[in-house]
Amino acid sequence: MLSADELERYARHIVLREVGGPGQAALKEASVLVIGAGGLGAPALMYLAAAGVGTLGVVDDDVVSLSNLQRQIIHATPDIGRRKVDTAASRIYVYWGGAKGVAESARTILATPPGFRPIHFEEAVNQGKQIFMEKPVATDPAGIQRVLAAAAIAKQKKLNVVVGLQRRYQNSYRELIKRVHDGAIGEIVGAQAWWNNDGVWVHPRQTGWTEMEYQMRNWYYFVWLCGDHITEQHIHNLDVINWAMDGYPVKAQGMGGREVRKGKDYGQIFDHHYVEFHYGDGTVLNSQCRHQKGTMSKVDELLIGTKGMLLCDAARITDNKGRLIYQFDKSKENQPYQTEHDELFAAIAKGEYKFWDAERGAKSSMTSILGRMATYSGQAVEWDKAINSGINIMPSAYDFSAAPPVLPDAEGNYPVAVPGVTKFF
Ligand SMILES: NC(=O)c1ccc[n+]([C@@H]2O[C@H](COP(=O)([O-])OP(=O)(O)OC[C@H]3O[C@@H](n4cnc5c(N)ncnc54)[C@H](O)[C@@H]3O)[C@@H](O)[C@H]2O)c1
Image (cartoon, rainbow, N blue to C red; front, top):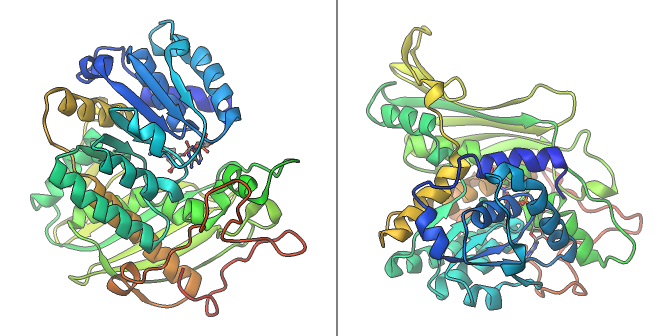
């Protein structure tokens, strides 16, 4: 769970402004359900609680998460406008799968580990909810198809859906990509994207956990739950390039492995991937993501055009000799984690249908899965074949006593993909 420092960081992300933004009126009347009250969902709850949401529901499979949540809300209260948050008013459900809880709320926030997202999204759409769902929206092609099918129904029903690819709600990115679409760098001919840093938490096995519960708690390291870090984190950068390209790759090939991420606690995922994504017009995106301590950190995107370049982190457009064409004024930057909720709730309050992020969220999630299929297999993988492959890596039963889809060997180690041997997954 979150340390106090992490909590403060997330709380600032979600609860940056004083209560009173455009979405607040709707929030006060809303009954909101959060599914998955962990690192991301808990701060979202604080935001909602601080805004005075009448009924707040929580679905989480873990009582530890729920008691931490209570502690976190109390801890974070000074950060959310020095208001007393009455958690006793909240209704708390403890089970997983989502259907019952979804039925009792008007709006839903989906923030469990990504593998469960298609199940929860489908259910929320079937029940006519307005939805905020975190990225990535699935971990396998079958899950992507499930989300795309539900997204089409959400569109028919005019249900707002915001996906937590927050750069789409960030002022600098909105200004920069608009200029790219208006021709500021000419025709795009190449791109690069990076998510390189130290990696994330690990939750070692505890006595009394079944194998399924262990994988759920240490979810980052299991592909069915997380998708690997290319999907769980690098999706943000891949989505920016897809946004600028106004399309998705048709093919990918790449390489990857785990050089330093070794041992039982680290499940099956790689610690680096390097992928060439080919778009239909011939543009190539070179993408790299790495989780290795002590190496260079960089999280950024670069677009190269016939007339200039976009450097996203610097929030700058230059000509191809480096001369400045446009610099975003960083004092005008917003807090996108806040804006994505504000804009969604403002639309709901006005009865507007403004957000249909699910389809592009699914296709950017698929982009990252395509990259993983290429690095795991060592083969060139085509989008159409991959997305229609029907590959489904989820369990056949959802219960702490059920068998997860991947099991350790006699020494407790999990199978890791071997390029040239592993088939796509
Ligand atoms: N947009 C961003 O920048 C951003 C940042 C952090 C996390 N996220 C996303 O948010 C999601 C959650 O990440 P996190 O860091 O909060 O993880 P976390 O492990 O801290 O929290 C997940 C919570 O979900 C609960 N849970 C797991 N399976 C469940 C189920 N089937 N039903 C109900 N509850 C369940 C867990 O008990 C836990 O409390 C992920 O998809 C992650 O990618 C997005």
